[in-house]
Image (cartoon, rainbow over all chains, first blue to last red; front, top):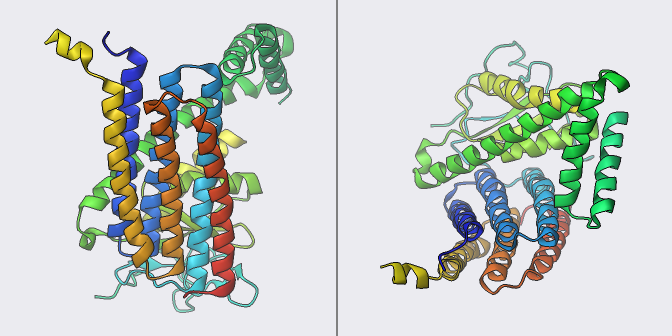
Length: 144
Length: 157
Length: 97
């Protein structure tokens, strides 16, 4: 018997999920600093696992399994970005070095080390630098 | 909102009648309830609910599309040498919004192309976003606000 | 030809292949786990390993016809989220190492 249609779709989703997971893993090794690594891990990790879970739901085509799968996917999409965001925040606060070719860092100097609170940027999103008070594009703060 | 609750109750009723509580039966019940409420619209008065539903669905489609684009872009970044990157952290000024709205916005930004929310200021008016390709911080800021914040707030309000 | 196609076990083949690729992905994240210069780097590597294990559980559940395994996936995802948040708080309190 040739493969049923839901099996074929499930296989496509498994392959997509696996490919994205691999991209996440390679990205986490190859990217230069914590934040670019987080970009890779948070996006592709979430969609990769989401695809495999969706494949399970499609493969079994059973309402109970589908309910569970929907629950897992919903949970994954809510919590994964939050977890990533918490690590990024903690990493920045703890002073993990940001990549030297980073073009602009408007988060610099905005943290209050004592109270662990974060200031808002002033108005137009200009840097907290007193010189850079005027509106308009900021000159890129990159080092050669 | 009242109509939404009515719609949920109809979905619940449908699930009770079919005798199984699953995403499938609740979803089918919800769709039938929605159609039913649509038909009796002249009786219950016009509501934003019907327009809202369409907005939510179109936002979901937009989100899924963006999610796939984001993943393909990460894949692209992984294969290209890192000398092509121009990452940066940009401060995005936010509209006045509730905790839930801010959380959802941060999550959506994290999962969409090139952006990753790092932290939100204590007064919830500035979101600091790590962006993969910053050509011009002002433009990036404007783009994030236009593309995602505006759409999301449109759906949520 | 048709006979060959009929005998071909698509799901079995795909799940074995994916399982192997997932194992390679896990090795890559292990590299980051050992090399990671800072604690947050290691935490994201662990987070990714957990996500990959959920994926592996899902693929295993398809390959071996055991839908109940999805529940194990839920548990892993839940516990890891709590663990990551706890780690993040720990890093924020103690600083970089």
